[in-house]
Length: 112
Length: 117
Image 1 (spheres, chains in turn red, blue):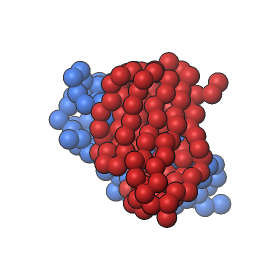
Image 2 (tube, rainbow over the protein chains, first blue to last red):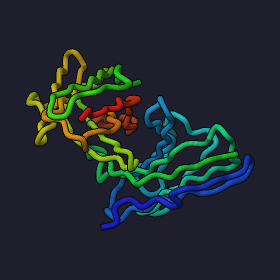
Image 3 (cartoon, chains in turn cyan, orange):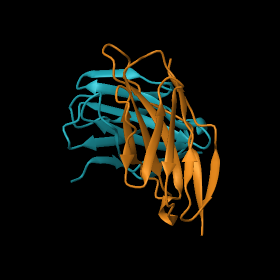
């Protein structure tokens, strides 16, 4: 079982570059979300989606875009990377809004 | 807005001893879920235990148990017979179970647990 798959695992960007972090789940989960993890800050919610075609902002949405065209995929786009976006990014999904989150293995992003 | 607070950034415990990690939260809701997640050095996030607010009985999973005090808004995790493999960052998380609420799962900042051999 693949679960939640995130790609890439590591990425280095230069300031101003754009990129997309991919997230796919094969569990038919309605809920998907993106978090960033920074030292001493825990996990902070960037964007989330309660179903295909529906997205909403979390705590720290600025500089990021998302879309949910299918139930399986929830890509996170960095429009113009900044050093402040250096972080570890996690995608997570859950079957319903009452279920625990299943996490991907994370993407370590460095912006120079 | 809901908040989750873990007041212990780091803790240490001797192998085979018992340790309790603290978590408090703030909410005006009556129906919600609370979770503890473990993040070992591999970076993987692993669900340890889950508590439903309307259940008075404290959840237990093998060596892991919680002390859920709803009135005090406290949700501590007790690890018995600590093992070297328990060394990790532990996160407490809150999720609303009420209809028509923002479905944002809120995490605390984490407690790093060291196991001393």
